[in-house]
Length: 100
Image (cartoon, rainbow, N blue to C red; front, side):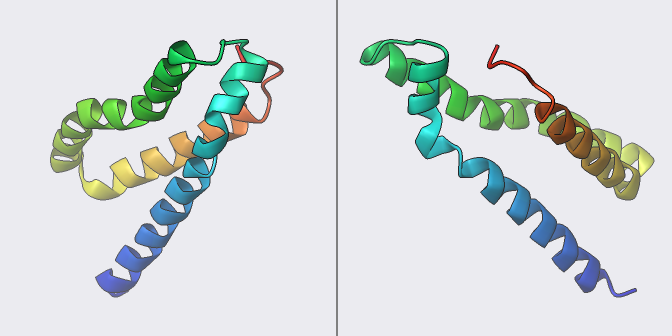
C-alpha cells in the first residue's frame, strides 16, 4: 500500500479528532460556571485558560517520550497504541455521571 494513502488516512483521523475536541472550547466557560459553580470574572477566565491549555501542555511534555519509544519499537505499534488508547478514553468519557 502506498505510504501517501496511509498518511492521508492518518492525517484525516487526527484532524477529525482534534476538530471534534476543539468544538467544546467555546462552551468551556459556560460549563465551568454552571456545572462546577466557578464564579464569573477572573477566576472563571483562569480556569478556562488552564482547562484549554492542559492538553497542549501535556502533549508538549509527553511527545518526546512517545517519539523516542516510536524510534525504538517502531511507529506503527505507537500509532496503534495511541488510537486504541484514545478510543478507550473517549469511550470512558461517555460513561461519566458527573463533571468531577
